[in-house]
Image (cartoon, rainbow, N blue to C red):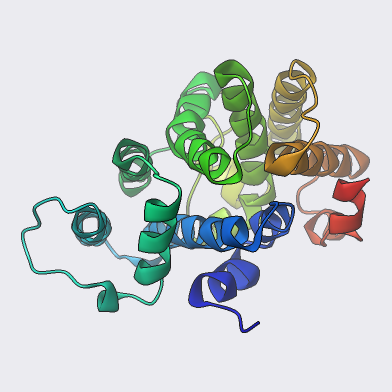
Length: 264
């Protein structure tokens, strides 16, 4: 079966979530997850590809208008599913799995924080950001995969996974002058210069926070939540083995046999 546009995007740019999608029960669920994750990739990359806040807001507004068109809501300009290759696949996912508009809107609102180019003040502030972005994304994914998980456990899993993802993205973010680690722990200059004296204690604290959240969740028995739980566990163990040094070449390498290790 030929890859669709969303699958191409996710497999190329978001390998962890692509791996997670492979644990969905049916091909229809996989295709819907690819559309969801491709949408997330498109809105998440806004901060890296625009030169100022206004252009970023215009881009996020474009995606909100595209969603409005899919949901039959009013749009300021005429929109079509032909406007972007993933829109037909996203529309199919929304219709097939009755995905609620409000969760997409929450995700877009969360992504507006990216455009302010602000470093989170505290770890709690970073957690709030993750709840507003990774939270609705995981809720949508669970609706697609029919995973039954308690709300508190879902949010805890979204936060643990989000923290792990932010740690792994530190070098990439630094290249784009983005500081996502809390200012209460480390300064922008220390992040961008990879000052391990202050960076390592911050990463240690965040890893511990993510691990504590993960430990409070009853391990899911199946589905993409189980896969995401195992992935996050593997990622956190990986950074611990690298002595919390995100600049370590071993840490930046892919975890070997990831899908196999998630499965077992």
